[in-house]
Image 1 (cartoon, one colour):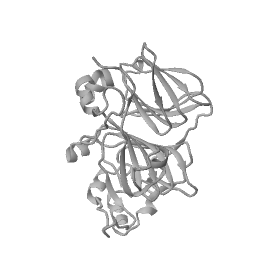
Image 2 (cartoon, rainbow, N blue to C red):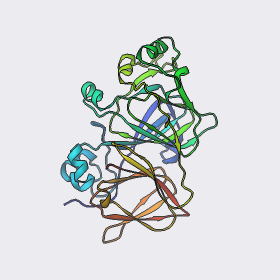
Image 3 (cartoon, rainbow, N blue to C red):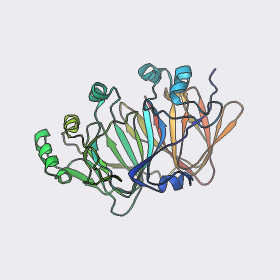
Image 4 (cartoon, rainbow, N blue to C red):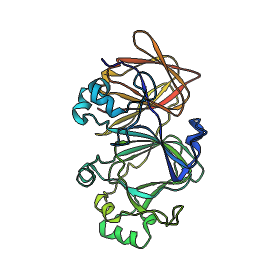
Length: 328
């Protein structure tokens, strides 16, 4: 029988050439090293699944738990679609320097080329330094032949939409959309459980060994969506208590949740598990008939299993704010 409780996971920290110091500081990890660009909070990426770090299941990874308690954790619908693979990857990203300009393939290409999910993702901006930039989609009409010329001539940046983000900005990035995160951005990323990236342009920089990172031009050109859109950015900050939808797509549904007083949050009635990514404040999570308690701090993430009917959230202070994610 599955012991129902909020599951917390050991963060998977990624040291990269563009990483910063915010994740290390906000998570209070003084021995974590430098240039941490990503904290994988909850990963279903095959071979890099998250490991539980609390309760009776501490030390087991999410794939192992799904193989034994799949429907209890993710619900019958999600389990019927994905089996023992957890379908999402949730991250904090701290860009002290520019990330590459890149694109991710959709499900069909990713399955054919990498036996992987595609990679549709969403960014929620937690902080952006003055002058920080994000890139999403094309600023001019283009096609595969024309964009190849821009890549080969080093003129990629002139074809991209440039945004100057603020806290609370939302960028939805379906697979196939060219994008890039500029220096000075700190954000939450929600995505399919895939780590397939096609690098298009890397600012001609070199690694510690003096070598340029590999580009994936041909694969990128095949994966890019060249259509023009008008919904690259939205903005949402909660000024009062409640839950507000961020984005619903066929891969996940995300919302913002602000709680100012003890509040009961439904789980099972959504038909899905629920992920809470805490980005402001601290909370007590009260659950079960015995009224057991789990604590959640800012910059932490928790998975609330489907079989948990509901959970009471008690702010430890004025309020607490989360990004919430379900799969419907």
